[in-house]
Amino acid sequence: MPSYLSSKGLEEIKQELERRQKITRREIAEKIAGAKELGDLSENFEYQEAKEEQGMNEARIAQLENQIHDVVVIDVSRGASSIGIGTMFIAQVNGEKRSFTMVGSNEANPLEGKISNESPIGLAFLGAREGDTVSIEVPSGTMKYKIVEIH
Image (tube, rainbow, N blue to C red; front, side, top):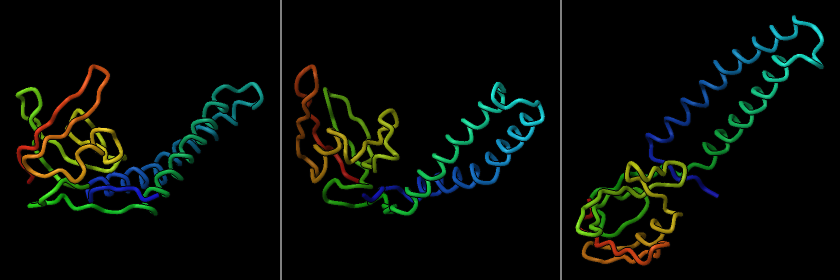
């Protein structure tokens, strides 16, 4: 399944991958070497902790490599007529205007207005045009968002 990222998001993932491969791996290897010098590994907490940290780091490296392999870079669209991945738009809810950007799930951050194309709210917005009203079911009832502007 493809991973949708902006060019900025892809760059951030590449930087994290490089940091984990070049710096974090070395730091963990040094911890393991230092712990081995303490003797009996079966009861060596520092050694066990470093090995666990190494496993988590390697798992994250594999995850980042898979994301990069399956990435589809999205452009932040300007002048789009309907909402899609990469579209920035303004919607009005309860009399308040809010800015959103439709992003892939890896970059979603609702507090920054970055909504995932896979989330219920994101799915509701996909394909909407200026002037459309989108209804989203939430635990407290139905929320209605009017698309004010797509830019």
